[in-house]
Structures are given as C-alpha cells and as structure tokens.
Image (cartoon, rainbow, N blue to C red; front, side, top):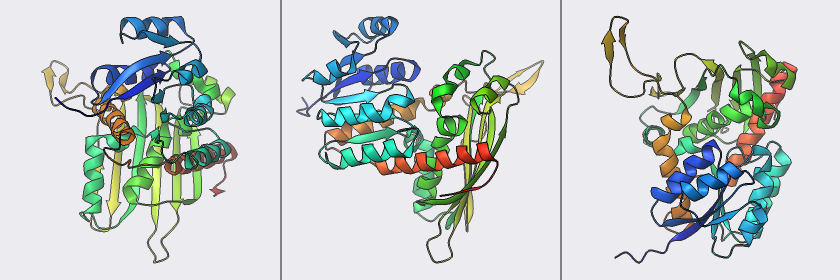
Length: 346
C-alpha cells in the first residue's frame, strides 16, 4: 500500500470548466482528495452533492478558506475574480490553481506576483492547459532537441465552433474580449514553444462577421494579431501571428505551426474528432471536435495532476505566475491595438 500523502482540495466555481475540474479531481487524479466546493448558485450546490459526492459545501469563498482540512484551492470562477481570490488563497496558506487569464489588468497580475513571492512555500499555478497537451509537449521537446533549428515564427489559432445562440456574448462585459479570452492561450504557446520572453510591439485587427451585438462591447467575433518579440541581441528574432474566431463552421479547431531555420512543426491541424472516416451519399468525411473540452480532455487531466504533484513536492512546475503576467501584458496590448487601429509598443 502506498504511503504517499494526499492533498486535500477545495473547488471554487462549478460552471462549465468547474464541473470539468470537479470530475477530474474527484475521480481521475492521483494523490488528492476533493473535500469541499464553493458556489453561491443552488444548482451548482446540488451538482457538488449529487455528482461529486461532497459533504462540505460553502456559498461563501472565505468560509471555504477557513476550512482547515482544505490545503489547496482550484479556482474556476469569473475572470474578474481571479486575482483577488488567488491572493486570498495564498494569504490563507493555501496552494492555488487559477484558470486563465490571471487578471484583466497588469496591476492585479503584479499584485499576485508580489503575494506569491512572499509565500514561496506555496504553489500558485495558472491554467494554461495547452502546455499539458501531449501533442504540444511533444512539439516542445522536438524544438528543444533542435529538430527544426531555431524557431522564429509561429502561426497559432483558436477557432470555436459557431454557436447560433451566442452563448459567449453574455460574458462579453467581463471576458476581456476575444484576444484575452481565447488568444491568451496562443500568446502563452508562442512564448513557451519559441523560448521567447518579452514582446516589443503588437498590432491587431478584427471584425464582427455574425455576432454584431459584440460591437456594443468593443469586441469582435474574428480577430488577427501580430506580435514582435524582442531579439536576443545576436540577430535572432521571433514573430507570432495569432487568429481567433467565434464563428468557425467545422468544429473547434486549435492548431499551431512553428517554423524554424531547419524545418517546421504543425500541431493540431484540422478539427477531426478521431481517426474514423464516414463514407456515404454525401461523400467521405470525419466528425469534428465540438469544443475545447473535447479537444483538450487529456490535457486538463495532466494539468491538474501537475498541480497536485507540485503541491506535494513530487515534481516542479513548468510555468510561473510571471508567465501569466506576460501573457496578460501582451493580450492587453493586442486589445488596445484592436480598439485604436494602431500598433502598440510595450
């Protein structure tokens, strides 16, 4: 029988992503126990009791933090709460996993950084789930091994299957816009895969192809951004071209192409759900991935396991709060450029 200590976790927020994390924590993660949940929404309380089998449930975040059996929290709450709730967790002596983005302004990111530095014994992790996808991890390893030479350009996209109900429009006032909500993943991938740090200039443009009500929030349903990264002083520079769409007609398609001096890598091209082809009177086709949950199902599980392992001292984290701050810095500059129509220097 294993003597490995178990990490006791409280889950905060049981919306779409919270339910996903709840199932992973309750049934699919080693060395942890989901012991409590928190949400002010009655239907989410019922879910915690009936689907996750929890006895401890709170309608107030501070009450969960006061629960002495909770050693770590997973925050799947609205974006505008991320920074403050992360700070509260750290100040309460809890490890914390928080969904992306860390915040919708740079000041809050820096506040979290400062608090995290004052609590070095605690793990603070932001959910950049694509870093834990097996295909992206394999690509990162190949780049580190020099298989495509020195990477200098990435083309990366997050394209969501068109939802005729406009579900996401309801969150437009608090999402930060398409680039902060969707492309922050691509921004993080660009920095991680190409091994670059700071951006020096960005430019963005976009349009509303279908969801014209987004114009009220100065948002778009399709956007393109270009990022110029700082060079290393030896003539080596890198660029990123990022595309985001809410109106994709063929399923959810996340893909990236990394181009180097000796070759290129293409990750996640197409939106095929599996390797099955259907042939009938309509032709030959494949079923498409429906959403990011389906595309990154395995990555979500690996991500949560990485958080638990880091809290228990079993393995170091591969990303930092500073990574989240830089992704927010770039995402905000891209959004500013979208609004102004002009390049923005960082």
